[in-house]
Image 1 (cartoon, rainbow, N blue to C red):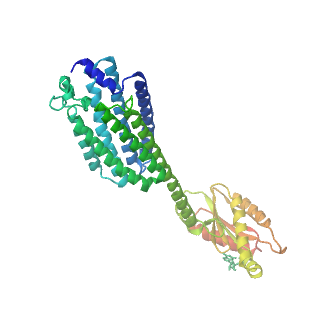
Image 2: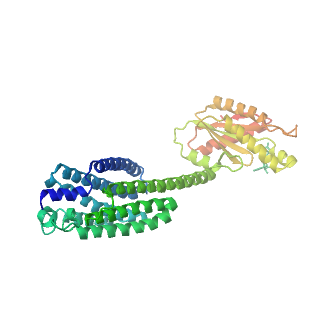
Image 3: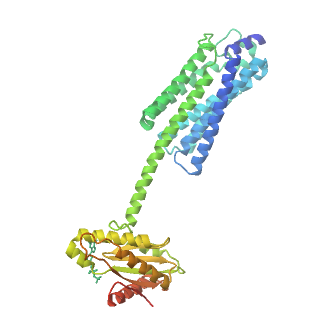
Length: 422
Ligand SMILES: Nc1nc2c(ncn2[C@@H]2O[C@H](COP(=O)(O)OP(=O)(O)OP(=O)(O)O)[C@@H](O)[C@H]2O)c(=O)[nH]1
């Protein structure tokens, strides 16, 4: 085939200046998308996210699409510069990228369908794609007529794709259509209506450009440019948007689940009436303290609380317990842990507190209890007795017993005071 006829043929495939510019811009957009996706995928892997395998397949499909666009662009620039000997290499690169892109799309589809797709199965799909792509690199006239340019003269169908071009192109379109059809169906179930429309539009765009390019290869020009490149980029943008939507939905579902889990964990460690920690939580915290832990335990028991219940009822008693818990909570320092031990008893772990510090905290608590509003009954006042023991025993339970004994001493002394265990 004379050089000028190959050049004319390729020129029909979109080598005027503004088509080239469109290609260059599309390549830039695809590269930018690829970079974004790489960062996104890397972040998913670093956080060991279960969406990472799907994102990786998508990033690979995007990489192949970018390689395709870049290869296509290079071959057109070669055609413009008249360097026809160099045309075949970017063509082969571009077509190999299509094969690998299809493999990546099929793998993504499988990963989306079954979260734990065995890696060897995905590897087999990539190997199949790589084997098919390698056929394009066999530089034998019987297989690739394009490398033997004179023999393609007169044959305008897929001329630049070589002898394997027609079956290859049909195979690609069938595989592409099948994969996309399955993905479109899946998109509706997993991604909702918007993701479905985005996928459909992307698919239709690429499919129409495929038809357009096929007709162009047959000599029927519908548009004055190769529509495949912008179609590919539009598809990538649509697919990326669908992926972002899918992922943001997954994230919000996950946030909701985290919230519920935190709520459940909170419920398991909190006393429902007072909102303070429960006894089980304090016990496990004290169990976890090392032998050199410093501080002590303050045992608090309300004075004559039974009278409150008897005179004003349990609802009023509950409200008083809540008010006491709130005062305890506000008086505690960072690192202290207050729990409702049971009934009208509270135990506070005072971190790093010696008897003097505990005494001043206890007095502040007694003052705080005095501020609890009496409500409509002026004679309703709540006081408390307290016992403190420093953590000097091997076992915190013994310390708690000492604090309890000190509390009884406080009760014996007439209530409303704090006693320190010796
Ligand atoms: N409202 C209410 N009362 C409770 C709750 N748990 C225990 N009580 C009551 O708290 C009271 C505790 O009373 P006692 O331990 O006998 O002691 P007290 O009346 O405070 O007297 P002293 O401790 O000797 O000063 C009992 O009447 C229990 O029924 C609760 O969750 N809500």
